[in-house]
Image (cartoon, rainbow, N blue to C red; front, side, top):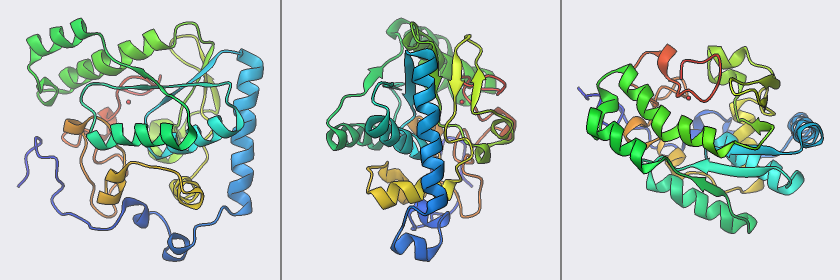
Length: 261
């Protein structure tokens, strides 16, 4: 039996993660079909409208599959939107390598935001280096220190921010709207809300975009290394995030109306 400290699921699956969400024929020759192309045009239009209506717009990239798609749409179609990413200090090396590969692919830099050292030191002193395993509250506090506080600092001066939230990801996210207001008073735009997971991967593979190699090891949703593991065939895509918790707490706090991202 594996403990909550074990980063492996009970059984490994050698297939790339995207093989579990796409048809075999689509994997051999992924193509952007007309329906997906139309969705992409709508997503780009929402991004353009965001710049038109709010001028200063930022995208906080999670470096997940949705982030790969949004980075592609923004940097190729709406380059006026700034892109940043949060380096929590506990990210897998594969995630950092993806960031470097993206920057080389597009010839642009992503702004990297890190938590305040004093905040991290205070958390570790009080709760231990891996205190997030002890309780939901301690884990959410760790997310607050490493993600929420740096995010709040990074979005100062912006009027709107872009997210990669999709309806399929959770019950809470299924109730979202493409254009909404967040808890900080900013406009929140989710242009991929109605994309399916298969469509996300079709876009990535058809365009040959760089993605996190952990997806080839059946990791679905990837966050900090100690809080992420591969999933089993048929499991929910977020089952590998904070797997020792219940479904209703597997968030981190960046999205309003949700317990925590």
